[in-house]
Length: 499
Ligand code: C2O
Image 1 (tube, rainbow, N blue to C red):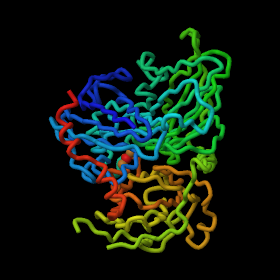
Image 2: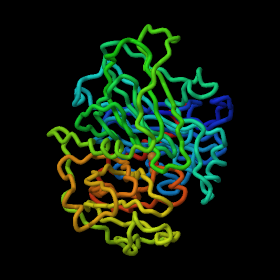
Image 3: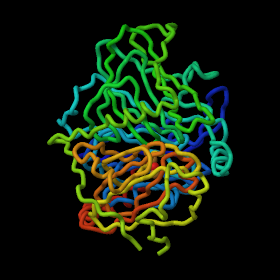
Image 4: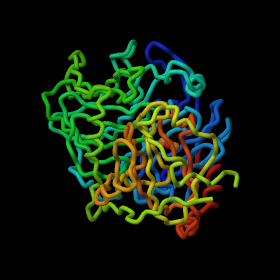
């Protein structure tokens, strides 16, 4: 195992998109930010120096951070933000994970421009459980806003206004030629006929679940959230903010230029956001004067596609990559600076998805966390409700992967639905799209002591308060990792090696 060191300078940079130029917060002047490369087993040290006039913190989304919460990153949950002029070293080991994850600012809406991919290669001499690709490409989806992000947050937090939409979606920071002034802001991936490519796809958008397709080419899904899946072929994929998906694509069509396109899955119909960002799947030696064809994307409100796509996701569950689903689940039973009276049962009996708006307006403000004994097995059912309207919510848990043992439409029925759980090969991930007007049941083993944020990854909803945290009590793993964690090294080097 090696130690990988990165220097992240958080700094303003003038960027222009869609005929508008403005200073945006970046890492090292890059938009998207640099990709972090590491190998399973490596130690990674990232010194973040904040030169911007905003407080900053960075989250390594999907990394488990065993007993290492101080490197997790969410501001005011596991650390104070890094103030202007200061630095902070994120120091972590990558244990038992390989694949594509990502990093992003975890304060206000600064992740609008401060994000990048994390590529974790398998251990040396450990092959992928799928055919070896000839090449690979990181593909990160994002959103571009003409407005200043702070203004966007203010508008977003003013309940009652229509949802705050971005001016464009982007692929690797570029909206593509369907937007004004964007011909030169078009990402192209060069491929050779007959070769196979691994696309490492990240949805870093703030508020949109996205459909993605490549004209004329099927994709084979092989990994989600840095966990291998049973491969399946599809002509389009769905990815929620926070999620990652690896696909294999064969350049097996007539050499040409093909659009890759991304557009929101919009289960809430109004207002319609139909902006399509494009990039180019460019066969070698084909002149750029050739006009590319657009792929067929599912319609914005194609809930049936969303359900059937998500149902195809299955853990690989082979001897090398087993799915160890916690079989016995304890429901949370809890009791500081915060309350631990997070309800372990619904606060009142009601019809979550069918009742009128007024029947569901009983929320109160509070900071209620759940305390969990070390190593308990936890089952959590996340139920969408008709508070404003039904909508799908990508829920992200820090510090763990979980198994999505069940999903359904309508109200979760504790008497009937658990019998239908998939306890054999459920998808293992860190962000689950809770279906529109439905529920998702997840299970995980609380083997990672610390305070772990749990929230909707639609930034608008996080801001409105769709968030909580789990406090996992101390346990044996803490000592084990603490001993191997040499803090003298950490402090000694944090001042020296970054110049
Ligand atoms: Cu990717 Cu708490 O977030």
